[in-house]
Image 1 (tube, rainbow, N blue to C red):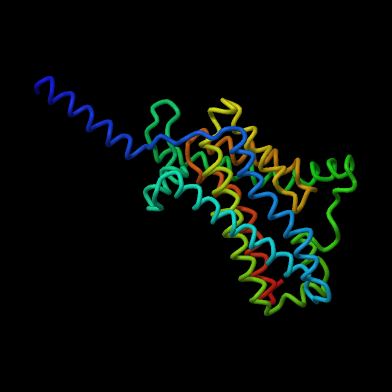
Image 2: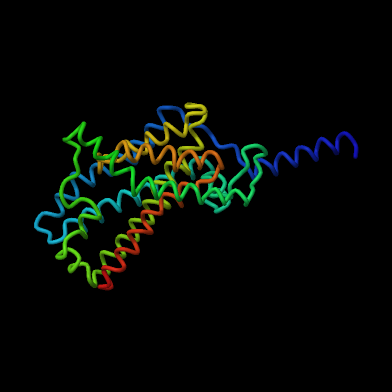
Length: 279
């Protein structure tokens, strides 16, 4: 192969590599905070202003609040798509997959995808379940004891909506509520919060925050929850260590999505039992 041919071959290889693994642009501190605000502010407004206004006189204020927050989660998906289109100029699946890290996990040593790394999902999921069952409640109680004004109002939690026999009886046959929850869960832990925080923001925070970008990502995730400020600290810890860190470590947003979705799967099965009258 001549020198000119070798040079051309290397250029073509570079073009192919750039196509497969595009250079993801980095956000400034201001842009990171602006995207964060674009997600957090609507959720706060919907949770504390819109939902209470719409639920006056409603027999099911919990359903009204769930519907209002679902709109905010759908907006997050739309926001990600808008920003991605402005960045890449298209919304082809290959673009979405590569630029939002919706790919198989990659080796931190070689940068190549390695399907064997999927096995790391097992400890990540187990730790997430243990944290949500045994730890996050303690963290939230400690946080609220320090800042009592941020305590959760009665009737806001999903568990609270199903705690009394009367509430359980009302859930029998409530398929509208069930499918609303499924839509909420989809945009919450799959293509809403996770797509925005771990798919869009995290890969674009390295230049500004360096090796601690996953910690800042977790903090932003925690303090995005203005619609439920009693989870600020608990969500920040979970977001950093169980969602952002494995996502960055393996360059795959699926780690955060799958770990975060464990709560959605749990409540989906619990609600299904109630709707079918089995619980």
